[in-house]
Image (tube, rainbow, N blue to C red; front, side):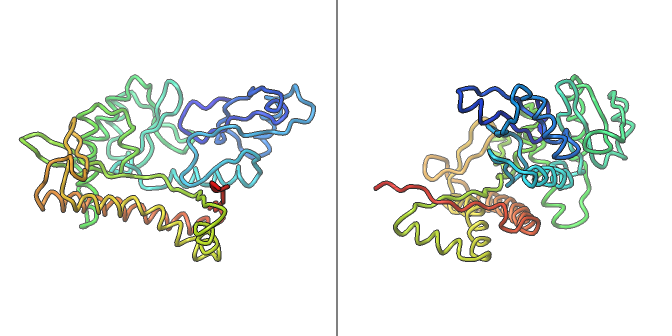
Amino acid sequence: METTSKTPGAYIGTYAKYNNGSLYGAWMDLTKYASYDDFLSACHELHKDELDPEFMCQDTKYMPDGISFPEAFSRQDFEDVITAYKESLKEISASVNDIRIVDYSEKAIAVYGNTKSIKDKLKALGGRFNPRLRDGAGWIFSKKSEEEVRKLINGCAEHSISKSEIDIKTNEYKNALAEYCKLINDCGYYSKEYEGAVKIEKDGNPFYYLIEKPRIENSFWFEDEGPDYEYYLQVVANEESKKNYFLSRNINSFENEVKRANKGFVSFERNRAYIDYHDGEPVNDDTRKRIIDGIMFGKERFEKRLNSYLKRWGTSKLGFKTYWANR
């Protein structure tokens, strides 16, 4: 069963076929199956030409943040992916109003979240409310209506009223990102892949520094000899050292970005603002501070995700491995 939406998918072949030079298999949407046994039944049906197939995951896509589906997968691997996927649906969405737009199929999109205040507008755009959609209650639309639906959702985000200082800052960055997405006619990529944006005016034109929303890195490699191997032994010595390394490695990109921003050089291109070491234009302290505040906002959001990940999985999903160093 091939995946048609951005849900966790695995390409399932068999070791026998692979060893004989065949990559025959199919993309399978893991969320389509009520249980691991149902998933295995579908795998057996796909490879019914083998008497006792040994299934092999040859590729994956749209895996939940920090979760993998290995080549030789198990029941636990399957259940972990499904659990993580369901939990991801409950996270704060990219929209200020906690409204998510997702690809539902090749011909449809779905809208989930707190849509009560705009239900009449969604209906007017041709939406049909369905309490039994794949990810819960929501609205279903033809993909032909996607642009109008996104304009409606982004418009609501721009007029949201915050209730605290944190909400005010969140709304500022989210609304700036929504402006940028409108400006470039984004179809959903940037609104999903970034936490927000810092809006910068230059020569009367708007530019946007996009705040990163990295994926969680959970696989780490070390050389199998020398100082790097000694460091590896320190990292894997206990649970606390593993957690500290995991947090440090993931947060490192934000810390480096702050260091670059402190140099005070920014490049401006096609409504994007990029931090640069020397090739960009020098900016004033206020602009530099606003960019750094945006970076720190992204860092704080990412730290919350990392801590939630550790709270849910501990170090069970972290991989610390060595490789043959050059000799």
